[in-house]
Structures are given as structure tokens and as C-alpha cells.
Image 1 (cartoon, rainbow, N blue to C red):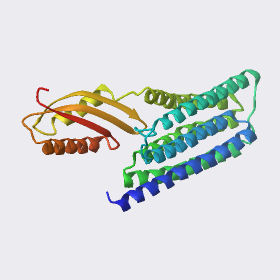
Image 2: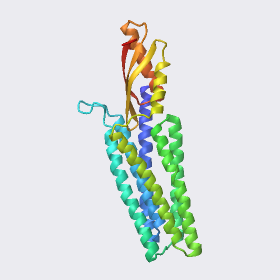
Image 3: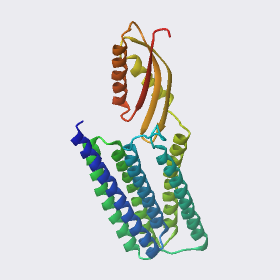
Image 4: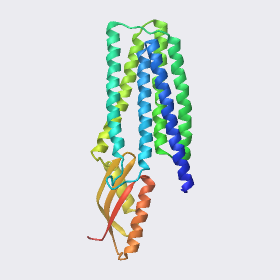
Amino acid sequence: MTRETIDQYVSQTRQALILSISVAALLMTVKFAAGLMTHSMAIMASALDSTLDLMMSALNLFAFKAASKPPDTEHAYGHGKIESLAGLFQSLFIGISGSYVIFEAVRRLILGSYVAEIPLGIGVIVFAAVMTALLTWRLKRLSLQNRSLILGTEKVHYSMDFVSYLGVILALVLVGRTGKVFWDLIVSILVAAYIFKEAFGIFRRAVSELLDRGLSNTELNKVRMIILRHHPAIVGAHSLRSRMVGNQVFLDFHIEIRGEDDFKKAHDMTESLIAKIRETYVNADVTVHFDPEGE
């Protein structure tokens, strides 16, 4: 990959993430305003979902910038755990907000409620669906063009919003036709439950990274097979360790080399092995120690 190609990738990815943040902020604002005007908890829950989208996109932008920031003397392994801390606090905030949505929905189910300006509410959700579709299309094109994992992740979590949009529209239509507000409240609880699920996933990943969780046994076995199949002279691998921070994986291990006394050749073998591992784990930071067979 040439320097020009790398610069283009960085620029396009940054612009796409800023676009995601802008769209999420717009939809969050419009939905909250519509929720206040219509008194619809389903729309308010959807606004909270856009808040989660906004935070996720902001976190991805932050992570993308942090990934390009080189390690320094005080942070020899980089700054990736800042992303984990940010994700931890965001998941807690979203969890508290989701709890409020459920509490308010239950309170309205008990005490009674109403939904007004239903056509306005439906129009806002349709607008949100169109904006999300255009954003998803743009993210898909760029992720395929640049083979960007972070943009692919963005595309997936915005694509999933369509399910909640259909639910909110259905709820508003049913409220309008039947006059029963509980449809709106039930959908708001379902959307809040979906938000809880997403927030819990962020929380679990953040805690795992802060505790230096590594690759799964399946993934470690995959790495071990890459090592042992790389060159006939590599007859063993041991002390394989890993840890993950953000989208980067750190690996270190020892390999046993048979019949190779030339230091330069052994060094070249380990460098080609590192390049081979990075074909599977693109952002891997790999440290290899090579030993003579039997030692």
C-alpha cells in the first residue's frame, strides 16, 4: 500500500466517521423534539438509540485517531485502553438512560398516557429511515473500497436501526387506528431492551480489554497452526500469549528452529512469520523469540 493510498484511506475513513456522527446528532435532535411534541415513548426510545449511535461513532473516530498515534515512553503499548475506558462510561450512561425509558413507560402504563400528532411522528421516523439508508449505503461503499473494519462495523450498527424504525412506525399506526396507547409503550420497552443489549456488549468488551483478556482458545490454536505451518524448520511453538486493546491484538511467543545456525536467516524467518500472521490479524503487534530445537 503506497503512502498516497494510506493517506486516502485515512482521509476517507475520518470523513465517513464524521458524517456518521453528524447524521446521528441530527436524528437524535429531531427524534427528541418529535418525542416531546407527540408524547411518544417509542420515539423517545428511538432518540436514545440515536444517542447510542452518536456515541459509538464518536468512539470509533476516537479509536481511529488513537490507533494512528504512536506509542510513547509512558505508553509503550499505545493508547488503546483510553477507548476501553470511554466505552465503559458510555455503556453505563446508556444503561441508566435505558432504565429511565423503561421506568417512564411502566409509569405511563399504570397511570395512563396519550400520543398526539401521530402523522408527525411517523414522518420523523420515515425521515430517519431514509437518512440512515443513505448513510449505510455510503459506509458500505467505503468499507468495501478500503476494506475498512471500522467502517464495516459502523455500517452494521446503523443497518440494525431499521428494525426499531419499523417497530416504532407500526406502534404509531396501531395507536392511531385503535386509540390504545399501550402499543407505543410496549414498543418503547422493546427498543430500550435492544439498547440494553447493545450497551451490555460494549460494557463487556470494555471490561475484558481493561483486564487484558486475550484471544479465545480457538483463535490461539489458529495462530499456533499458522506458526507451525509457516516453514519446515519451525518444529515447535510455546509460551504463546495474547491480549487485545481496541482493534489491535498483541502476540508474543517462542518458536523452536531445527538445523539453522545462521542468525540472519533465523531473523528473516521470524520476520516473514510476523508478516504471515498480519495477513489474518491486520493490526497485530507481534513479538517472536527464536530458540534452537530442544531449548
